[in-house]
Image (cartoon, one colour):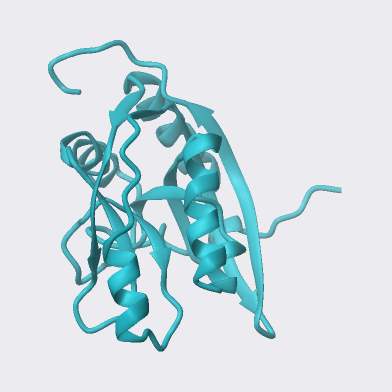
Length: 190
């Protein structure tokens, strides 16, 4: 029996999946920082949902979204990336690894923003990042340790996912709605 449930009825994000070897290093940092919420999430770089443009509109047509995102991803080559320094988002306890070259991530987000997919608004400018910790409170010593984190290996992001993320009685409900590869050839766009 086919379900009529809209997968976007809960907040849904388009992300680039971090390769396993690098993801494990981030997970170890999350574990050290006892961030149970972050430990329940994949290690990724959010393209839509956390800043710049918001989550996919809850009333958006799933087939339309999956087709458009798949087509855009198929035209984008794998993204070569290196993490930069750790920053703390202002007025929060959220610590993230920045990226040395934000250009490809911003281009990907712009293509999605211009694609016809409806997204909710988001008041924050887009800052591509990988979250290390969001658990509060943070002591000065913990913050000092986080600022010293350094993952210097270059890596390639060649897969994307769309995740829906809800919570139910403090339990995280994460579902991967779509998975695909970045298949494009190098061009002036990327």
